[in-house]
Length: 259
Image 1 (cartoon, helix red, strand yellow):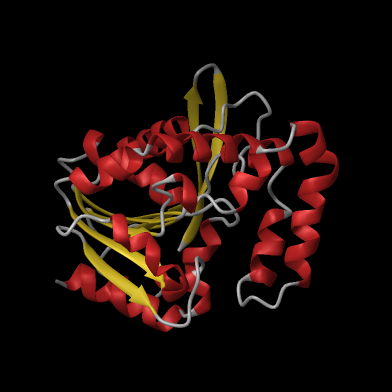
Image 2: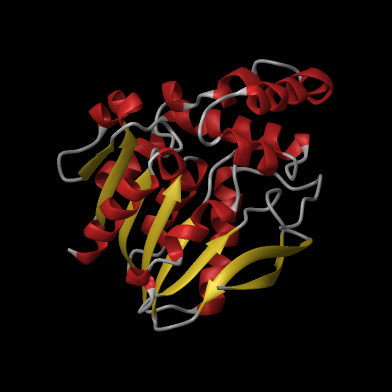
């Protein structure tokens, strides 16, 4: 894969969006990361032999990874979705298979309707659907921004650095690239959308082929998923199943796409 920056004009802002990209065909795998990560979380997956016939694209959201981080951007789920749609319109794929983890699963869900003629399938890796799914975002938004910026964000990073979770080392590194205002505003939007349960409704009612993937530590999240959605439980894994148990995660994704 190669690094490529997409230049966009959005709501008066000139934005640079960082991606990994490889063009192979008109059928694309597009990957969207979560709140505590970046496009790198998909690097190993997309290098698998299975994906060679596909074009692939992994995107850093605005405020994350190597993309621009303007203070006057909203960081709302719907605005991030609009930016991803603009990038998709630039590459103009014939077919799309979306893979979205956590926050990226929320953004992907909003794209299902607007791009329903192109999106063939969607792997939702524990995208937030209801309020109880919000995890750390719930704690963040309970605090005034000033307290979060000066105290809580540092505490979150320090706690993660001491953690023995398999994903902790990488998440600690990725968090260093996220400014506090981007993390805070994103958390606010995650919580607002999750409370409304609109994402859940949109996901369950979508017409595309869908898979909801979850770590076995979070199996309760699958209880709210429609029967028309394929479910994949990853053993010995939590929210970051792609790091906790990568081989099983990869195989489930590959089998889903192959069928």
